[in-house]
Picture: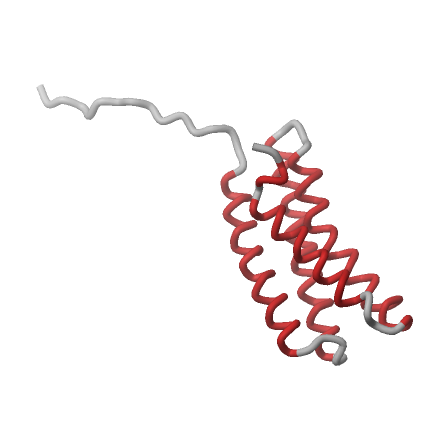
Length: 129
């Protein structure tokens, strides 16, 4: 099971591509200000997931997932600014926000799952003598 099979990674990659596609149609001023920032933050979600996945320790993987989560929230901020400045339609904004909300929940679950496998001891209940 590789990185490309992780749903959160695939979703993050799709969001990055969608934001790239939308921002590439903006004017030069908009691309150089909001466009650059939103593409950078959106792409950072997937790239941090990838970097963490490639690390050798659970702690480092989790740390890069926290960076990915920070980039996700930064992307929400830039997305909101783009919407407020009428660079996105209501439909585009709502779809991306919905996708980011789903990704946020899945990313939180993924972060909680990172760690060494839990060993469940097979203990018998105490017996009354």
